[in-house]
Image (tube, rainbow, N blue to C red):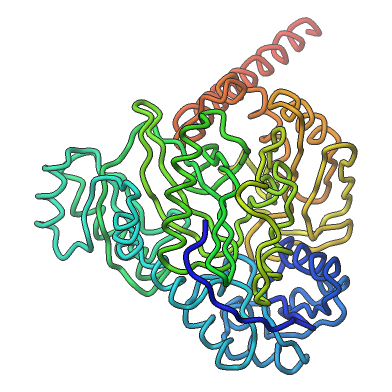
Length: 482
């Protein structure tokens, strides 16, 4: 869909990657495919990581702590300029959704591979984003604007009806978010959510929405260019999550119909058009699994962690497309070219121990034997001998499979997980393998609270029963020997 036209072309000759881990590797490889020089900006802790090894050059941004390196605007920009780069890709996380950073890049003469500071700012504030969504005809969950007091929140909660959800206006990743089921819980929840949001984002402002009990998390991938064209590339189902952190993503969604996809896609495209969106973005929705009604949640103004599943089912390289449109080129495809082919599933593999409440476990990987084969893809920065740092998140990689059908994709993912061998640190590989056998997942009948409220309690009960049976068998064996 086309909105406006603006001609602006500036080729990129050398790009600075202002990120780390698997997304940094992914961007380096995209630059290679486009014939663009690439510099990996890394902290001192990541100097021997895979991205700087694969890039043309590496620049140290600062010490290991993110606040002194990947989140330090002046050091990042200075390193990009020092290394002779004319563009910068922020990846996801860190500085990727800071309007002030995008503006600082422009002021320094760097092409920012992403949307304009204005689009980032408008979508970054949840209240502004909701208002823009409503103006674009996108339905929102019944709720408020920014809350000024407990009394205001209490009156609105009574009107909407409990349970309600408190959310930070500047939030993300589940921080500054609380479910409130009773009026007596509201005051404490507001204080807790506001304090958490203030610590995480520097802004404790909250708003309130009706909490949907059986909610699916569905997101639409969009891509726009500087000529005012915005295209959507179908949806991703991200309902298999824990504490608002996604564990497994897939495309297409088992809950989707062609009519629902078309309407969600239309809404996402219209919202992006209304903010003159350029680059890759994701419009997230809540789908009420009971009524089939969907509501706007938020827009992420960056490439998503789970973008590979969309690449698998559409055949388009989204990171390369980001870099193309940042140079002022038109999108290489139109809406008519977008076809969803088969089914893709992604498992996020983390250095966490599922048996210890998913406790992160940094350490050195002593063995790394990754799966391969038809329809199997692994986006990672890890290898045997790699030291997983305690300074950053625990993501080791993303295992993605593609099959002709959902059942074939599940079977392919099972085989890939079975073949994935990592030693030296605990990982979530066994957990993912178990989830793929769960009846609810196999039926495509999961909501955002399924893992926490149903799957994990059942898993713990099975483990307790197995431990009890093992203890009983040991006692019986000892009695026989006696």
